Image 1 (tube, one colour):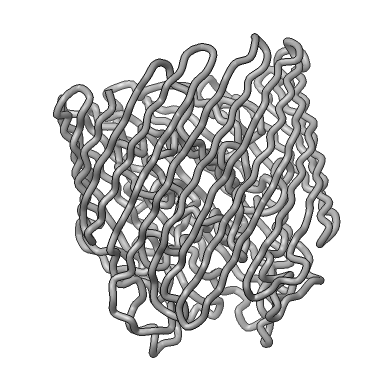
Image 2: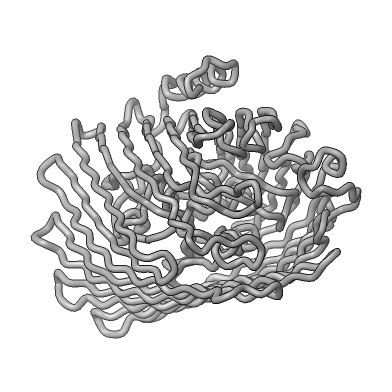
Amino acid sequence: MLFKKTFLSKAVSTSLLTLLSMPAHAEPEKLEQIVVTDTRTDTSVSDTLSSISVVTREDIERYDYRTIAEALNSLPGVVIGNSGGLGKQTSLFIRGTESNHTQILLNGAKLATNEFGAPQIEHIPIQSIERIELVRGPQSSLYGSSSIGGTIQIFTRDKQSGFQPRLSIAAGSHNTKETNIGFSAGNELAWFNFDAGHLDSDGFDSCDGRSATLGIGCFADEPDNDGYRNKNYSLRAGTQLGSRLNLEAFKLYSSGRTHYDGFYNETLFEQYTTGLTAKADLTDIWKLTSSVSKSIFDSRNFGADTNRFENKKNTFSIQSDVSIKDNHIFTLGYDYEDDKVEALSGYDEAERENNAYFAQLQGRFGDHDYRFSIREDDNEQYGSDTSVNAAWGYQFTANTRAYINYGEAFSAPSFVDVFSPFGANPDLEPEESESIEVGIAGNVTNVDWTVAAFRTRVDNLIILDDFFVPQNISEAMIKGVEFTASTVLFGVNLNGQFSLLDPENKADNENRGNVLPRRAEQTLTINAFKQFGQYSLGTKLYVSGRRFDDAANERRLSSFTTLDIVGGYQIAPSTSLKLKVANLFDEQYETVAGFNSDSTNVMLSLHYSP
């Protein structure tokens, strides 16, 4: 199934090969990126032993990404399912795994989830974001539950020197209006960042009218616009106490309302995460990091009935990193997590604690890199689980490097599965996975490229039985290949990705051999950006293969192609104007059956930043 020679596969393969074969006439910008999500320590991207992508603040501004999901949708291995536009349920499927198989962190803190175990990324304001790190593949040996498909860490705006104010105002289709204001201030001893924003949109009709008759989507025919409102602010500050102690605190808050069709017609939400981190260089070779965080997601639903759900997640972590000689780091750590849910419908004993200990050894011998990590999680609801990750890399030449890694991961049952008063199963076991990945990266004629192939088996998948009670009876086998390339050609910054995915249902029932729901089997992204003096032009081409919306593969969602264009004009050194036209050719498509996607839409924005 994975390597069928479909028209789409041929088209995207040809496009990527063309990009790789083009001569580069200018050296691409070589800035060594440092990431922390892969190992929980500072690591350069070129030294990692996993598949990693980074979305920077520059990327967000170049392509005028309006949401976190839009920025992530450009990355390999990522498939997005959206239920009707801004502020609507947005699901991430990383490397073909479930939407609750991705751990999402904010400045190192785990986000509170909805009752189904998925963080609500649709309410996180992207204007407050400095960068996003995505590590594809299992990460439970460092982060515990929900890291089967990958781990995403979102960082709010970071330290900057001096005083730098910023302001942006935007207006566009669907009577959308957005205002963001903020500033950064800092010196060698202390720094502070503040951002505040307000977004209001009338939206569009989120649910397809067919759903009332076909039994899909919102199961209703309500042809009205479904708007969205979000008020938010972000604070992040740090200080240096002496030469060896650093303190940092942050808070990200958003609240508002979203409208949609169906049994519920309106949701009021409040979401915030706050944290405090202390980093101490105890000696020249010994670092200690400790953090505490609190995250809340509260939603109140109104319509034919009234419902409320609130998840509170409190965490504490302490981590010790010891450098052994110059090329090896030994890490020991402890994580504590307390999850609690409150709901009007009444959840019995809807609280659970988790204690975890983890260790990691990483380093280099000549041209060889290695990493080994192990973690033991002890959860009061489902017991203990041990996760292991091992990786090895080899530098063949100055420009070519290969790696192989093996990882185990698990995902704890959601609150709905275990504690819901309607058909819960307290005896559920965690979903578990084993993955192996082989990757190679290099540079040819100033083209940076990567290829990664992986195979993941997920056991104990949780599905609903004939009486709508969750059971551990299913499994899946997911195979895939991902290609990336980037270069600068005639002054044009080019980067792209092409992903092939075979997410196969291996359950012992009538759906065996089918494609897992809502996963596109092929995706292609090509981004291009060019600066012409005071003018700039950015484009994003996105191609998605077919997907199915149900386990029986009876509801097929067709492949689609979208093109976004962003034009910019530098009015003054500190002021710029941007015009974004998304879905230029008005492609009509669905990522979730019965829910509409936006047609051609326009956004005009003014930006001030000295």
